[in-house]
Length: 539
Image (cartoon, rainbow, N blue to C red; front, side, top):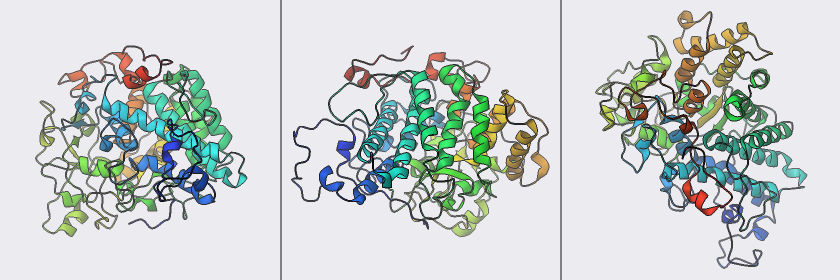
């Protein structure tokens, strides 16, 4: 159960206006027909209306609609369960890589691992739609709060969320996408596309403008944990710069180092135990987690986020009480990920111990991350859960004392979107790529902090490293945290033949695929609806 307060996510009946949808009513300030619905003129008479709308800006990461766990979805035209932000991002970031496969036959889900998606794919529509709903709601808050100094910090947070979403759009769909801000009033119009260079500059300038307005790093952790602070803005800037060569063809490793150092100097430190970062009470670990997406088994029920992660990764011979999950039997890791871990690396621990009592079972296996009992490490075909590689127990809906969380279906685990370990790895990579302002000595020191935690002693420490090491260490440290596709593209290891994994491009031992697949297509429905848009190259 959660112990800190956050702006929890009330249903806001005026959300449809925030989405910029066309109204058939000329007078939008007319009173509501239903006395339980607040129109904007009523909702914004007090500060509570602004608070509710800001809460919706954050809630869009955790929930999938206006009614939990489902029943009034935000994204039309797709199954609501598919449309959650973290779940959609996870599918697009992880399924096309060596980190996992999916046994389910749901619509086109398996097309992602075999690199066969099309512009009509519903999972692409889900994430694209979710991104733009988030942007629209943030635009509405920024528009409503303009000139209200008492909401300066909150406005900066809405601008941060919008910039984060635009970064995700740039990273997944490229720069040839619709661009709207608070200056574009809701109504019937066709948004103009932007370019990668313009969108990169916009995200960069937005984050630099708001960084001094946002609260100091970790200032929200006492009673508003989950709200973005200055370090979260620095994190997106570091990510933007690290991937600049992918986006705009220019290396910006020096800038990456600058913003990594800002975060490191802000007083963050690694959690003592790796596994506790992914447990039901991980909100205790605010000194490593820089920005978390909050989940609560009672207050944020959805088929999204960590509820999806801990349920979908449990099945086969895995006792569901191990992770307090619902055994959906969907996602497993491939051998290509599992084999990256050396003996003694606790991040890849698969030493499962059978115990009779549930309490003893959980306590004994709380540090187990992979489940191999009865699982086929080699994948002859993408079929049932047990035939599809290794079970993953990274996200466990139990506490650090091995007690059950509030529910065995809805998660209490917060999703660590950004954490200090990633900063250490980005710093080391940017140094290796020739960035100025960092040192090899500091980079090795930061990497060894991760290695000492991973091994529980000094046996895993390194004295030198190269970029290949960094790519593998990022897999070991950050697997299933929505980074891998972006990493592989940045290292030119995504589409190429020199980095193969099971069923890459629908070949059992892996095969190269076309480089145009490094960018997802704009959903065909948006291309059809907006005459200003053109499809991404190759689709």
